[in-house]
Amino acid sequence: MAGKSTSIGLNIELPREQKANPYQDISLNFRHFFSRKVMFVKYATAYIVLPGGFGTLDEMAEILTLIQTGKTRKIPIILVESNFWTGLIDWFRNTLVNEGTISASDLDLIQMIDQPAAVVDAIFDYYRSRTFEPSAEEKERMLTL
Image (cartoon, rainbow, N blue to C red; front, side, top):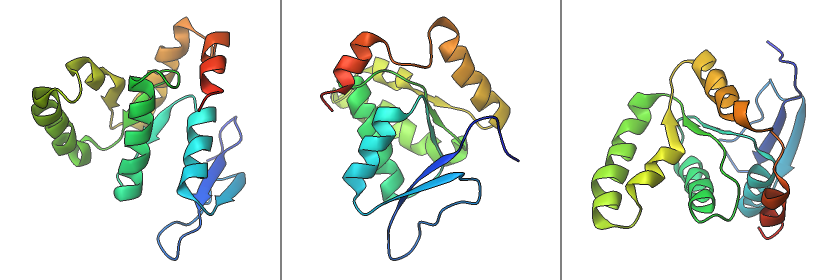
């Protein structure tokens, strides 16, 4: 089912695994992970993270690190399918926080939501008090990525 906005897919060229999904109106293909991640970071207004492998974990860790360190603006990071993510989030809480490698407040950057409508609601709730566009300060910060 098509939405009101154009769907842009950022695909990576791999020998196997990655395929463009049929919901993309525009498909952009990248040879290198780093250039694909820059596009995710610079232009996203939310990160919806579905179950995946090392590439998914890499992309999620990248955006968490950039937001945590103030290198990019704060936007919603939503993990879908809580059964998949709970063990990792528990490890973040019980190991990374306890070891002092992240602070407990860093976990507030992440939401776990399972229902598609609730994901959409969470994004719009976040933007009720601000615009989808980055502020002048956020744009300036994002120039240094």
